[in-house]
Image (cartoon, rainbow, N blue to C red; front, top):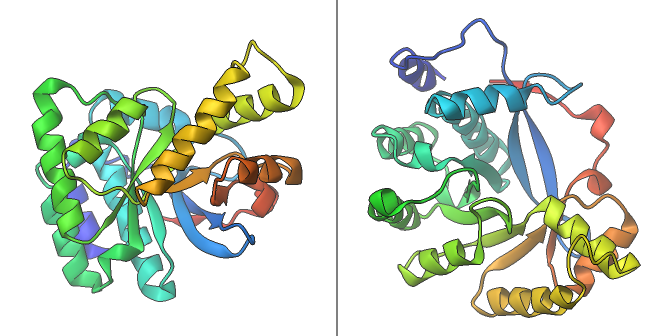
Length: 259
């Protein structure tokens, strides 16, 4: 943790007065067996107040402070448990001048296998032509360092098929795409109740085709926001192979870890 705090002292927004926590969400396979865990930033176990902090940090371009704390906890968890840990990655963090140096130093400090860390590129920021070359270069370097790389919340905000195609066409390997939870739930309701105002029922067949194509090139597919056995069965009918959310844990008993 000394390494992390050494970074934090150099950042303009430190929020040392605020206690920050993380929690882990399980990711399971078709048999509901443990596959990985995602580490998520939280302020408490009672509400979504962390969303306000994230919004503020993003607006100020100061999410890297939080990224270093989350990463330190994720690397420690991987070192102690040998679990694959999913870590959210903001585009602005990927472009931070300390990004690669921080990861390299943290690797030297923990001596973990980099393939135990799966960075999920978030949907919150557009990859503009001005930054595209730098973004793709750093993503390639993550590949070369043997970190895993995934796309978070596909079909939400800037996480689109075009983003997936651009990344793949630039020689960058993707480990997984995660279907956006709201998108998946709308697809589920549209399929079950024929709600055309959510997602056109004809698009369900297209979704099946897209998932089949992604899997055919070796990219894993995960569905989020699985809340019931019926939703779990629906996701399996789409040939989704990994799953995440409340159906696989007790949301009232999430363990928080100070970061």
